[in-house]
Length: 384
Image 1 (cartoon, rainbow, N blue to C red):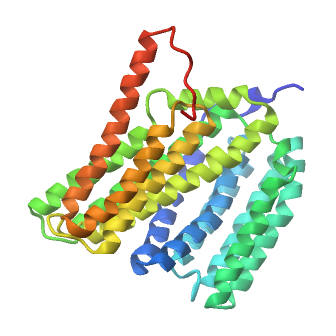
Image 2 (cartoon, helix red, strand yellow):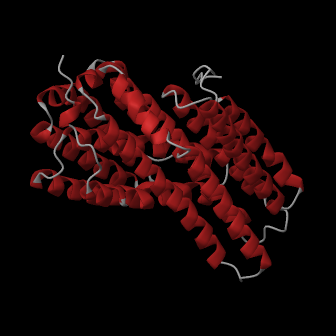
Image 3 (cartoon, rainbow, N blue to C red):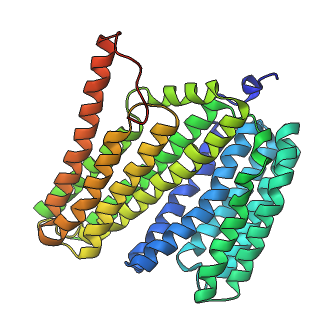
């Protein structure tokens, strides 16, 4: 079979960068759910809403991977989808209530635009694959519209059903016809992660502006920025992006589609959810990091970093980017810092989180350096 990777976009286009800007507001709105409802219910609603939105948002990365971005039709379509996603994001905080209908109809618009662009501009194989996927996405959108007419427990049934209907296509032969362009896909998701990191920085700045400047604010800002920078470093460690591209390129067409769903779909969803929880936690402790913060703030900070590291470790493991065991261990340690935040000032929890992340970065960098200097050492086992 002739590999069509050469036909795929090698670089992310400017229209994709414009399109991705709406994702900043999307993450902010999902974070707002947790801030307004700081409980397990709020976290569950945020996780479910983010999953539903991420399914179609990531679908546009598949679209631009398969269609020529210089097309006027694609550019106009992406702008229209951007407007639909913006309306969708506006409805996110109250999607389980008063904004349910707006959320559902905006989601339907996103699905219809996506399918139309794929049908018009996708390669023949990818267009045929999308024909098998589109009915499931449309059905999910209709279920979300139905959810907009009801409130209460019904939303907790209809949203998961809509999500399950849509992701069920992952277990069909639908994605198998898409020959994913590796370099473009890796770069596109890396840029999406930068956007997510940027939203986390914004949450730190917003929290700081709501309080009078002083030593507590200064210390909190420096530590929070340090944690976000360390999370960024974990994702972009060394030449991980190049390794990810090589892993994708070296895989079969079917395997690339599977990795696109798991490593770049599921694992990136987990990482973004972690950043959402972290950003929500920052809002609860940013006022005075020298005081013991509310329990919910401590647990959100701990869970945010821990969940992020779990997704990051799994991503590295799936693409054979290097050992992931240390990151799994760090995820557990970071999650346990929630207990520290219950009895000690928030500053100490932030210091421990930053220390753990720096420890992971330094240890892995030293190990990579030793391997480069010792060519007789066998290749890395990604699950060690």
